[in-house]
Length: 234
Length: 369
Image (cartoon, rainbow over the protein chains, first blue to last red):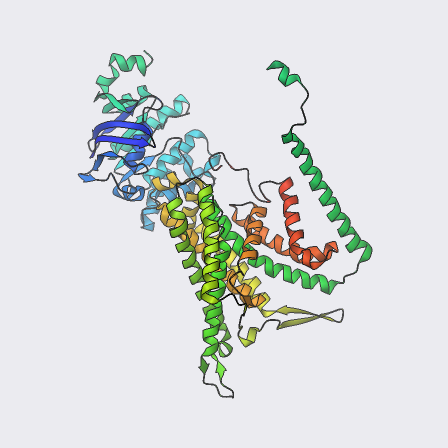
């Protein structure tokens, strides 16, 4: 479904991604784990079209999307939940959801989708008139995910959904991610919380300073001695 | 380190100005209050009809300032730059309206009586509506191309660069208008029905207070446009997308919002409002020349800062406030009318001393700074 080949991305003179290749099959949860500054968010933003690669390609459903604008990529079905949630703080929950459905033109579909989101995240229904900035961290993460789902993604990119959340909320969020995946959305999950990410993922890639240093089935990666010592605190 | 925190605070240059500023503010405020007391309570030199006239004039000019100020604030909200060529966009709108009236004045329509009427005199409503449509469209187009040519290539440049480009664009447009339309000052040809100075007359204390048609038109239309804009920003998909882009461009792009298209539309909307203000200015004040946008532009910028730049209700409030201060200020303070600009700007300085982010302004988040 998604195939990234030999991707090189620069921030000015800084070489952030140094020849990354990975792929994701339809229906999978693939996780990218790595420490701060490994290039995880850079990678997601390149897939989303916010950043553009100097070399290498991003292929989606057999089509090269390396040079497409972000709005085109959203329309094709790749939607990102950005790091730090990035809720529009001065807009209501309802308006945030509407912005998520910006590329959807059918009003009825937007309404149905919104109802579906309120059913999935009941707390958002009770807060629908509140400003996004007044929600708690967990509620904001749910809003961010609901907002992304409003666009009917085929592939959901999640950037650190567990960031800054209490452990019980993290479990809840990961349950939701699994649930979303079971309903047919492929997921590319970027995480520092390697333990949680590996527990729900099918396959995993380990990223270090712009390189992929390890890849394989999540269960294999989880038992790799290097991963255990570096990321799982073993 | 320890000894430094214990030593008494020195009168460094920094906190020196921290003391000076409020003192200046309080002195000016005291002077203003004293003058107000002198003029309003002690002398009571002016009667109600004079105040009424000034109030009406203030509301009218305030509406114009508010419309232009919204343009500054919208653009600042989205790009964090001051569009210094905005006054020139208004000037272009004024000229577009002027030429529309010239054209409609030139067309004779058959009429029962003699002499034959010109189109603009025979159908004043239609020609005024046409003038606003043409003025707003031309100014909107000017705003659109201004952004495309002068600002878009510099989107990723440091923030000082588009500012310089804006000043350059302002000079360019002024000089282009001077070349195209000659430096002469022209009279706006209003349709006869709303000739300047004509209006409803109130008799108060045996003296006449004229409420001009052009004034009422200006005030009512500016209020309607402001309400329309506010509803647009709050309720429509475009308005919500504008707010989303203003709060975070990257996240907005991740939602599938075409950021460049929203920026373009913001300039179109600001331009249209400035164009409407330009036609109002022409109809009400009657003069048009290449420099006509400069002072209203600067004043409206002041109004936008006064209200809290980036804040739309703030720009409306700031514009109205500035118009009223400019109109009522000289008389209320017993200062000669020629100094109205001085009074307006001094009051702006005093307000910014006590509220640096403007009346409705908020403390900018770190991200925006």
